[in-house]
Structures are given as structure tokens and as C-alpha cells.
Image (cartoon, rainbow, N blue to C red):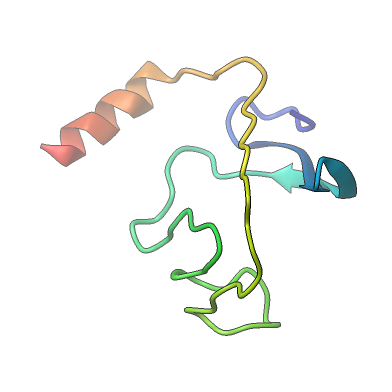
Length: 91
């Protein structure tokens, strides 16, 4: 985490290609609790809102992705009140 917020604090995003770091950037903040229902966590395509204006929604990566690693290292933040609200909305 790089931000001071209890929820939605940022971090560092790193891009590796063939185990070699090719890019790194600070992420100033993240989603505080949950993503919108119309957003997705796609790999190799973007079926939700485009991340950038450089491509249109539904774009598909045409290269080869051999491996994806999501590292969520660090302390997990728990907010029992918010988690209870989320669970109640699912019922």
C-alpha cells in the first residue's frame, strides 16, 4: 500500500515479461470495497469499460499469455460492517 486510507489505498503495479520487470507505476488508489457489477477482471480481453481510449470495449489481446500472477501481499483490511452489508444485499 502506498496511500494512507484504510480502504482503497494505492500500491505499486509491476509488469513482468519473461520474468523481467518491464514496467512499474504507482497506483494512487484502488476500489474501496467492491467493483461495479458491470466491470470484469479479464485477462487477455476487456469485456468491461476500456482502461484507456487507445482501444474499444471488447478488445482482445492477440499475443500469447503464458502466465499471470496476482500478488496480494500485505495485510488484508477487514470491515465487518461493510462485509455484512454486502452479504445482506446478496440475499
